[in-house]
Amino acid sequence: MLSVIIPAFNEEEMVGKACQVISGVLSDADIPHELIFVDDGSSDSTWEKLQELPAKSLHFSRNFGKEAAIYAGLEASSGECAVVIDCDLQHPPQKIVEMYRLWEEGYEVVEAVKAERGRESFSRKMAALTFYRIISKETGIDMSRASDFKLLDRKAVLALLNMKEKQAFFRALSSWIGFKTTRIEFEVQEREAGVSKWSTRALFKYAITNITSFSAAPMQIVTGLGVVMFIVMVVFGCIAIYQKIAGIALGGFTTVILLLLFIGSIIMMSLGIMGYYVSKIYEEVKARPRYIVSEKKGFEE
Image (cartoon, rainbow, N blue to C red):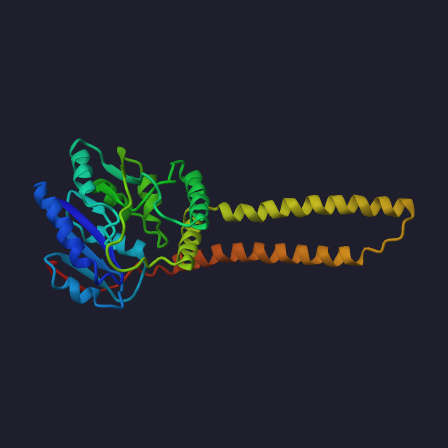
């Protein structure tokens, strides 16, 4: 059986359509399946709409984020394999059939990658390129076209669930775990209803959280800044010694002020980066759950 994990946040206009389309596609292909919607603490009537659908569903006590919703769905799944797909249907459900057939051939992870990124502003594309370049370097896997649209064998699902880190980045970890993997391409579809929940601020926060949870690259910025400061100090030191030997009066009050401001800003930036990592350690040590489920529908008690 195939488990379909569908995270939803304020998708009252799309949950019914998603259930109908995905279930129809899989039924037509004669694929036994279960649909598991995960309501990520929606503030609209998403949960009320889900209770009317012939699908299993979980409701979070508050908004815990998409990563938590994905892991909750994986933990609740019972199929021999599971696929994660967005509720807005921008991931074409028809591709699930192709992914399932590849799984039947023996592949344990089937990744759907974007043929292109779709309609995005230049600034957002550049930001995404930078983000995925860092993640790709850390994982050793090209993630420039990666998405959360993936099919995982039960072995891969268990491998992910056994990772107890709270700030888990599903898109990267599902590639990092390995297993027999293949890829298929898909075209990003236009959203039929509702609006994207990802603002520029939310995407920036998402990127920072996932980079720091999967990589120590920002910590290397501190080292780089230290090297820059050393070079600057050597240059100015040589200038000061030359002026002293040459008997030239030093009138560099402005230079001193600028150097102090420069050094101070670098120190504060470095402390901020290190403090962010310390805060992540603090969050992990507290060992709070990734999510809290307040209500369930369709699951055996």
